Image 1 (tube, rainbow, N blue to C red):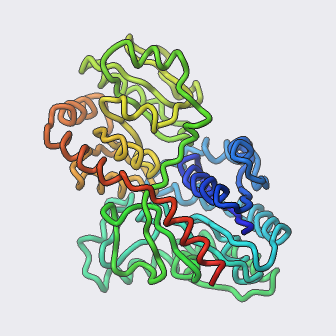
Image 2: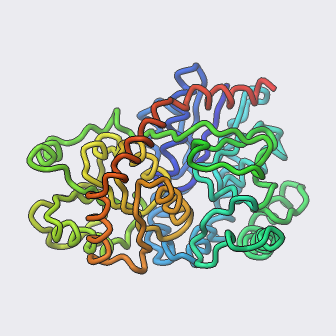
Image 3: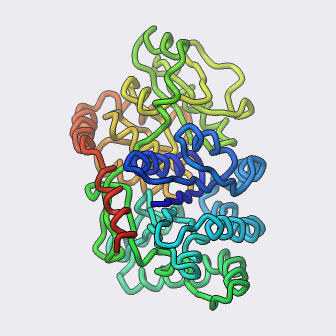
Length: 415
């Protein structure tokens, strides 16, 4: 098969696609990653073909947008209409050029609008992939959204009305202009409620998270859930000698990471580091960009640009993070307590789910301070129930989801 991977987002969004692509390549298929320029080295390391869709400057411009992590303004930062008008045609025409009819299949994420159009226009089979439950929505089991008003308390008729309003008024306001203008160029009719059923592929919808983490009876009928794909470049990025020395030099540290796309994290890093200092805990900051790293780190605190979570989380006392689904999954697999500071997107819902699982505490970014972080972290580390729940959840992740995931993807083209 000629398989296109079409993720959009940060490393946490791209890594699961690469993990699936590696497994499919080992089964004899040709893999092409169509993504931002910054992911080309990652593709080449896996012997994937690579097509650039977006420059490194485009990516950096978005990550430096102060609205990116705002609970209500983040959607406007992500659905930048100028960038959509630029990249919809670029992505579509890359798919069109590389298509081998009868042999090609596309695997696209939540924001895969160009692949959805390509399926409609070119007839290429498409697998819609969701890495987190919130991207599907549900009337029966509504997720926790970044806004303070939660649909859990609404009657079902009001939940349905809320989804209709969000899809038809709010999301179409972001998406309809660029998407329908491009569809018109291709001779396709305009669509409404783009964020509704249209964006889900009729061929297959994959949830790359287990049913015990989330499931709902009103998700698409053609949806299948396999499990977390926890690829993180560990085979190509071993821990540095300096980091190994630090880990062996004392008690397990608290790892602090607020996502690979975070560029405005300084106040959160300062609060987290201070909380660890007050509790006499060693700590490690995993983050790039010198501007957001505290100028003076206390004794027992070190900073590294990157380390594979799968190698470092099992050696941590706890992890303080933003609630991204990739980081959350790695914490669950490592059996380590989590202090989650959600800001936007799927983060509040992921945080809510791990708190309900009994493996985490959560503090909203607006309330995140050294005092609150220290109190929550101290509770996590001294609660035997939390420790036992972490161990129980860790055992649930012994199964490998990739064989089933690959078989489901291959079945789409065979059909």
